[in-house]
Picture 1 (cartoon, rainbow, N blue to C red):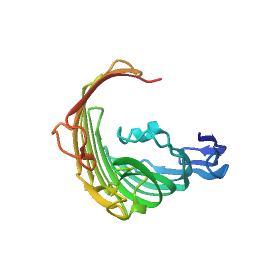
Picture 2 (cartoon, rainbow, N blue to C red):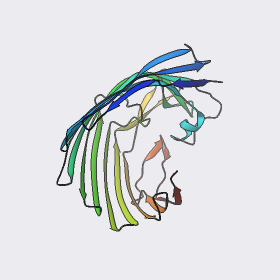
Picture 3 (spheres, rainbow, N blue to C red):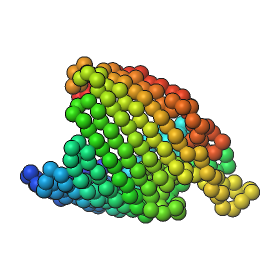
Picture 4 (cartoon, rainbow, N blue to C red):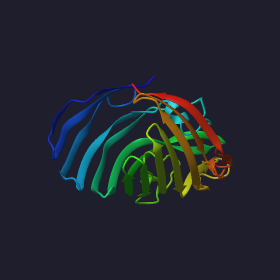
Length: 276
């Protein structure tokens, strides 16, 4: 049994130009090594003009690897293994925003993550397991937004890791993607109703496959790029209540969740959302 308790004391200051949060994150862990871990919890943001802004954020802390969180990556995870806690000494991201000008804005981002025993998937003896890796990864990206009144919202983004090694894997990209391209368009013809068309491409994905009988080191197996075109619609009754429908992978593009295990093809979801 593993456990993590967290305390976040901080000081906050803000006005129309500057936002400051200075604090620490104190994690108390149970049955997983050192009992006390300290990480920064800092945010500094500036917004000196309507057409420019920036921020610097530092974080970190302990990450509890529950089976539920790992199953979110793949339902094929073995239930026979329990995983401990991953440690992030420090994470950071820096951003600069230019705009909006005539509804358009550009945001540039640079992020860093240092993580120890961070769980990444690996195929070992025909089982999906997670192996603890020490990551020192950088990620850079840009996002372009354009908004016309409350009728049309367009977004486009591109993010890329700054390295191709295992340690360069971005902590949130367990499929080991190296580049992620995204775009979306939302149209609201009448105020309660909106339609969204979205696209995401995840490039240069891979996963190690290890067989102790055939080879002593894992072989890196490439996975197909993900090309996910989706369309959705929503009707908003109130600020809290809405209904929605969404179809993903409209083009039924083929990709692989694991080596030789195809990901979902065309799929959809209908639901009701209630915000508290």
